Amino acid sequence: MDFLYSGLLSITWQQWVMYGVGLLLIYLAIAKDFEPALLLPMGFGAILVNLPNSGVLTQMLEGLNEETTGIIEWLYNVGIEASEAMPILLFIGIGAMIDFGPLLSNPKMFLFGAAAQFGIFFTVVVAVLLGFDLKDAASIGIIGAADGPTSILVSKILGSQYIGAIAVAAYSYMALVPIVQPFAIKLVTTKKERMIRMDYNPKSVSKMTKILFPIIVTFIAGLIAPTSVALVGFLMFGNLLRECGVLDSLSQTAQNILANLITLLLGITISFSMRAEYFVTPQTIIIMILGLVAFVFDSIGGVLFAKILNLFLKKGKKINPMVGAAGISAFPMSARVVQKMGLKEDPTNHLLMHAISANVSGQIASVIAGGAIIKIVSEILQKMA
Image (cartoon, rainbow, N blue to C red; front, top):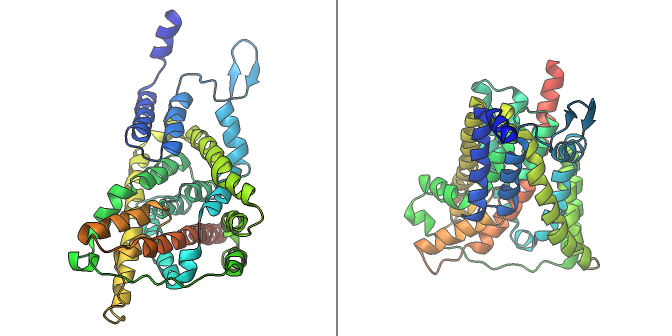
């Protein structure tokens, strides 16, 4: 009992806060079904790394004068710190899950993937004005893409000191898409606009087109934003596994076993950055708020872009502005939100395929935006050095 009593006394108030954060994440995962594959391991990991003298962290053994390697710290050093392997490998599974067919049959939806990244760059500017370093501001801004792996990778490559808070914010807002996006959409649309009907007459997409698409996108991304090749390339490689037609078993493995395993390990590994001394700070609260701003303005950016296009489109050809909000990376949650909102306004108005096209475009746009952010910020910092 003395050991238990002394252990309890050694817990700081910041660690108690992190236990609360961990339990909240676990609650949201189990009770609310909010991204359980990520929030549950992150929540449990937050408890593990904040236990006094936790064995999941590397430490010196008292009296033996030797170091013991902590498993979570080792996973972080190998899978994220040294190689960024975990978030990059996850993109193979994500790519294998995505069918680019609806997007290729309706290519104008590519525009919404680009427009819905507005919140990223807006928030970077706001964060800099609030006093964050450029590398931290850029890492915070990428939260708006609602793309957890990209947020982790950008913050790691740029060397942000807030990677834990950024990861929690990114995955939390991914989980909160059904709550946050309707609010953002209704801020800038009228009921009449939300009732706009869109015909869906998909063009057939050949197998050769689907095979060439990931290869061409990788080339273009490599020329425009070379630093995005790791992200875009692995995403497109996963999609090529899906579309080539001769590697069905590998495609299924990537979609299920690989994606689930990496997601599980990534969730508990990122908790290394959720240690109380680094996480329980005023900056964490500000980051959560800025992440929400980025996410909301990404959604609004896509909606406003659709409204601008409608100024030049004939009656009967106009775009339902809600589709623009689906240009973020949260696939397929955002598309489902748009479909649900459309049916609520008009039970006969189905927007899912249009929204899916924009949502798939957002997957590509978010990783390209991440690569562009890395390139731009790295060049600026080099010139300032």
